[in-house]
Image (cartoon, rainbow over all chains, first blue to last red; front, side, top):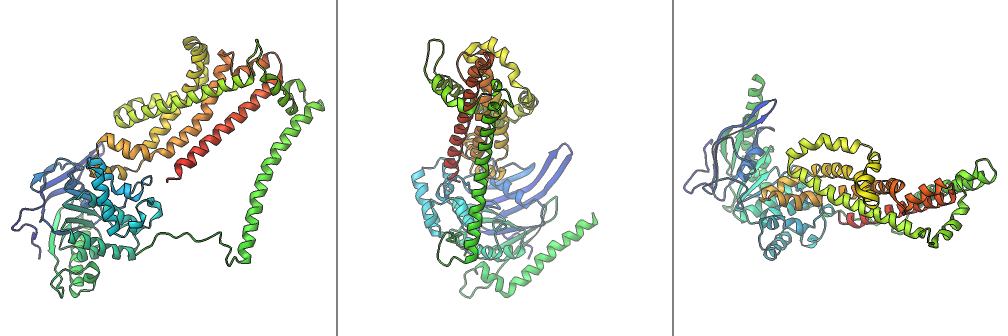
Length: 273
Length: 280
């Protein structure tokens, strides 16, 4: 059960080696992360869950190279991370679409920043947006779109630069519950089809179990890896279940209960402090 | 899956309920009442200004009459060897104001960008900026006259009076840009210059408009007080000159043109605002 499933025959796509992170302020020193080691295999879909404030989003910032760890090493595709990397796409908690740009222009922001030939990027962006059902809204402004559509535009923006690794930071937290379920299905399907390596951060156990192949549980601050859980659903055709179907699978509740208990332990542990 | 918000056909006449029709009528009446009150205030003001001096309740020497303004204006349209046309005076004031607030916007934005770029610079200069902004800049009118001469001192005052508030407003606009939008740009590897040009500047357009609104008025104040001291041209000069020779007709005509000029500037900026904001 609690096996580091990611480390197998192939070299990991994302690897953290004994990573620690501390923040400094005049009031003192805060230890956010402590000796975190984990590995994600190419094409693997991993979810990280943990109580709020455990530093799970910070983990994504480290992988994306927004800042460096205080201790240890972060590697992407075998190379140490020194800054933002084109292999990594990062989807934030909200869409943060620029209200002064059309949907198409928003989707192109990454290509613009990275200096990629724009004609080609525009073609790809149009293709992605059309595929995600936004073909008629290319020249609309973000405020004219619903929350779910905006988040799909944000996904197109992330995938437009063709990253191999996609980091998802609670990508559905700003959406209503129906949209959330529908979009989880859509996005999971897209990411699986494109064989992306995915790291999803969430506090929603159901989301983690239904979308990921492996769930990593983190402890409260200072964040540490508490346990690793491989998630397997038996699909009739041998493929993988959609997140919505997984929620109805008999194993779903078992996984849910196990992870729930894992998180609960830490609440008690925290009380003892 | 959710659909884009559809616009309900509010104005549609199909199936308009009596209650709705009633609501529309009351809403319209409300708007007309406000307009009517606005016009009435202006009318009462003009009537009092005309009648009180004529009835000798106030001394007409001090106030002139609204009815005297148009003839005075026509009279002053003609340029004489002693006196330029009133249009030349007006143009001189408008030009100095436009130069003043354009310079304040450009220089102020550049300073604000520098403060954003080097946070340490902001930390060092912050108290000086706040004090410079709080200073009554008009106290410098005589000093500027000595330093810069007749014409430049007017531009200088117009710039000085609006520069510091521009820096403070635009800098705080830059600071107000959502840090998550900046983070988003950073995830794509954006450089500081790219963050400035692709996120911070376009994200601060509403702040630029707000600064423009404040500046247009302030720059006009700067020009007028500058002209009091040093000019022989401009509406400020006319006001100064007219009051010295006790010709209130000239003073009031100049003040009226000033009111019209500031209204037109306000309208121009409002138009610019709606043109820019349509994209938001």
